[in-house]
Image (cartoon, helix red, strand yellow):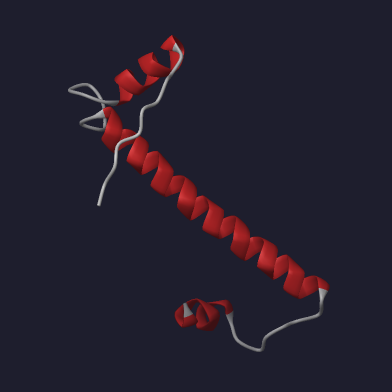
Length: 75
């Protein structure tokens, strides 16, 4: 179920969003553009968490005999 969100932008930010949307932009609507930005941010956050988890494993001498490809297949 989707819901709406009201957002206030500075004129500079609104101009930028407008340049990315519509006939001259990559996205059809500002909503489509913002949803894509949020999804990309969510994926970036997952990557940060994985890196931090890996650093914690190294710090605590937790290692694996599996290759990076084997580990990737587990996910």
